[in-house]
Amino acid sequence: MNDDALRNRFLAFAGPAKYRKFVGKCSPVPGESYQEWYKGLRFWAEKLWDDFIHASEFQDVSIAILVEAFRVCPVHNEGMSSGVPMFDPLGISRLHEDFEHCLDTEFPFGFLPTRLVCPTCLRSCCAWLDSKAWENSSADKFTRCLAKYRRLVENGPVRREEVFNDNLVCHLLPLDEATLESCISTLTTDELECFDSFFARQVRPHDYMPRLLWVSNRYSDIENEATAKRLRPRYFLIDALVRKRLAGR
Ligand SMILES: [Zn+2]
Image (cartoon, rainbow, N blue to C red; front, side, top):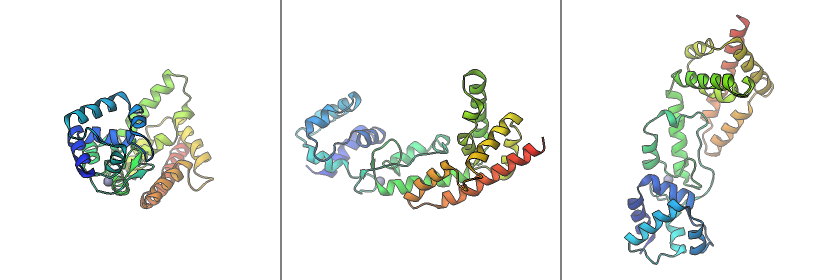
């Protein structure tokens, strides 16, 4: 019995999505006993593991073997360690139907919610998100988000200032200037003023806004500052367009 065989058999048994979920969230840690690890499993994971063990020749598998086998990325054959995976501040993954397939085949251990991270998966996932962020220039996402926020403000105890913030700005970031202008032209004066005060607090005095700093830190961790450099002027462009629109009212 060896680690590759165990990993490959479990991958074939569980399928890529369950494998990712199981290994990324329920992996044993060095020093743990088999009993401790098994007791800490969630019900679905315990059932998956039991079914696998009963159907396989790995009935006496030890924790040492599990630790070794599960801490190697099945796509890149690289050692993994506990770490912070990539996230998706712009919600790009939800716009692309092939994202799940890419998770399975290109970067299974680079994206939330995995806790075991493969360095190559992380870089590959970042590059994928980055390329998609700038090819998507549709206003639909902003329009849908705006409609949702308007409903929140109308129906709930949510104040306009709480929702007209960087979340909404993030949907504007990938758009070209003409599309940006047309999106901003759909905002009411109240909404424009919310944006304006948000930029006045967060962007103009700081050069960087906190969210951008957060994003750029995460990106630079994985050696991709290109995205952060491209994002920065976008914030200032949006700010300028909002002010221009307000001045014309
Ligand atoms: Zn990998």
